[in-house]
Length: 430
Image (cartoon, rainbow, N blue to C red; front, top):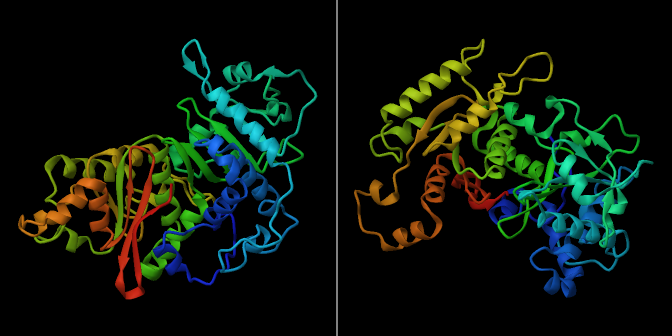
C-alpha cells in the first residue's frame, strides 16, 4: 500500500505521537510552507488561495512526483528534518504562477452556468497540448465535463480567454471515475493512461456541485469544499489507519481493511452523506447491558440479515474486503454501493478486524444514558457543540477504531488505546 506523498517520512516524532497531535501527512507541512511563501498574497486570494495552492502544486510536481528525485521529501521541500522550520534552500522558482492562473480559470468556470446547469471539467498536468482546434473553456466543460473527458492544455491558463483541447475521452462506463463506487476502488486511477506518452502527474477536477479536487494517481491530495481548502492525502490516511489497526489488533487484522474502510468513508464524504463506521474485536462488550450500544431494533436486525445473505461469499462470510476482489483472479462482489447505502443509515456500521460485517444501523447511547442519566453539564455542552455522531464515534473509538463522516465532507478518526499510548480524538483525514 502507498503511504501517501512520501514513502519514508523522517521526523523527530514517532508515528503515534504525530497522530496524537493530528499530523498524518507531510502534505500538511508542505501546505504550511507554501502559505508562508505566499503570505502576502493570501489576503487578496482568500478563501481560494490561488497563489498558495499554485505554489504547493509546483512543489509537489518538482519534488514529490519527480521520478528522478529520491531524496527525502522533508529535505526536498525545504523543511529540515524534525525541526518544523523552513530551510535556507527552500524551493522558490518554478511554474507555480502558471498553476495559479489555471486555478483561477477553474474557479471562474465554477461560477458559470449553462442553461442554469453548473459546469464541470478535469485538467491534468504537466501540460501536453495536442495539435487540434481549441474550445472555449465553457464549451469544453459543457461537452467534455468530468467523467467524459480530460484536457491537458496550457492555454487554459490564459485568464482573458482560456481555451483547451481534449487529451482523452472515457470510452466506456468501466473507465469513467464514477464506476469506482461499485467496488469501492481508490479514485483517480485513470491518471495512469497508457494512451499518453507523457503521463499526467496531477489532476484538477471541478465537479458540478462546485467541489474542486487536486489529485495524484489514486490519491486525492487537496479538496475545496465548505468554503475552503482541506488536506486529504487519502493514501497517507489509509496508511495511518493500517498502522493503527496493526497496533490495535495485530495479525488478526485483514491487510486490506484499512484501504476499504477509508475508501468507503471517502465516497460517503465526497457525496455529502453522513455516516459512522467502527472496527472492533469487543463487539460483545458493546452489546452488553451496560455497554454503549442500544439493543438492536427489528428493522436493523432484518436489514443486517438481508444484507449478510446477499454478501456471502464461498467462505460463507459477509465481508467488506470481498467487494473488490484480490486482483489475482478472484472476482469481487461489486457491492460497494450497497455498503454505501448501509453506511448512510442512522447508527453505526460495524466490522470486526477480519472485515466481517457485524451490525448495521446500531445506535450508540450518549454518555449520560450510560451513567443512568446522571447530570453532567460539561458532557452535555460538549455533545451539543460537536454533535451526537462525533460523540458516538469517540465512544466507539475506545473499543477499537471509528470514523465519523459529516454531511459537510469531514472524516474524523477516533482511537483510544492506552496500552500503546494512542489517544486520537477527531483526527481530520478529509
